Image (tube, rainbow, N blue to C red; front, side, top):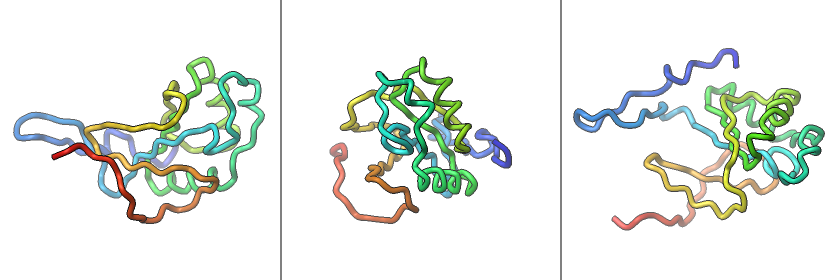
Length: 145
C-alpha cells in the first residue's frame, strides 16, 4: 500500500555476539496478526464460502485497523480460511477498503491457541468491539526459568 516503508527498511539487524539472529521491528511499530471471521466480520465457516464475499465488515474494525496502518503499524490478516478462499478473501478486503500488508491462510481451526515463539507475543481476545488498546494486568503462562 502507498506511504508505507518497505518492511526491510523497518527491520533492525540483530546479532547475538557474532551470530545474526531474527530481525526486529522498531519498538514503536506493532506487527498485528488479525483474524477475519468473527473478528472483523461475521463468523463464517469455511464450509460456507459463498457467504465470504457478501458479508459486511464490522465498521469499528475497518476504522481502527486502517488507523493502525496509517500510523505505520504492520497489518497481517491471519485466517483459518484455506488457500482455496484466498481470492475471495483478497477481493472482500480490497472491496471494503481494508489496508494491510499481508494475508496468511490456513491458521489452525478451533481456537484455544497457545502461541510459542522466540519473539515477544501479545494476545488480545476480540470481544465484540474494536477500540484503541489499553493496558491491563493479567496472569499468563510462561516457561520456568
